Amino acid sequence: MNNLLKQSLAGLRVLLVLTVITGVLYPLAVWGIGRVPGLQANAEGSIITRNGQAVGSALIGVDPVAEDPANDPWFHTRPSALAEGPLGPGDPSSSLGSNKSAVNEDYDAVVAERRAAVAAREGVAPEQVPADAVTASASGLDPQISPAYAALQVARVARVTGLSEAVVRDLVAAGTTGRGLGVLGDPAVNVLQVNLAVRAAG
Image (tube, rainbow, N blue to C red; front, side, top):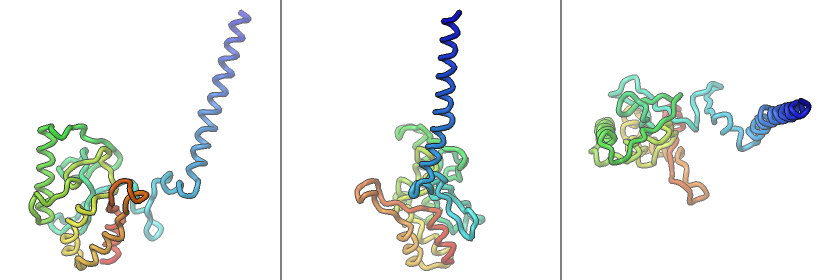
């Protein structure tokens, strides 16, 4: 009985110590690290504000929906695997890929449908549509697109907004990031930031 009591007290002490470490100290440490300058924006979701109001996140791509699809003034993100239609919009509260391989017949059909839809929207031949315009990412929430996909959308955005193509191209260039450390990843265009710049210039 004495031995059982000792083991129970030892187990209780371990439980209390681990509760303090994992339930109090560790969360406080993570929260504290998230306040470090340079990390705080990422920890808080990199919220973009205009006139004191949150308009979106620089890290979560939400495809804009035009009031009139025939006169669409927005740059668009990559498609989401969770979207109801071929191009979206997806549900920003959910993150999921299709998990279908490139040789899956259903996947090929969806990609072909997306390619035709993007080509029709931009007024170009299907073979001019870049890969990231028709393939969903693993998360479905990419905030960025390739410069090629952004360039494909410039003429439509300029026509609908009344801006010159040169101005829209300059806004895209300003919203384009290069390779990390000069060698990592590919150049990318943040869709939300460019759309905000287009709206401000219009």
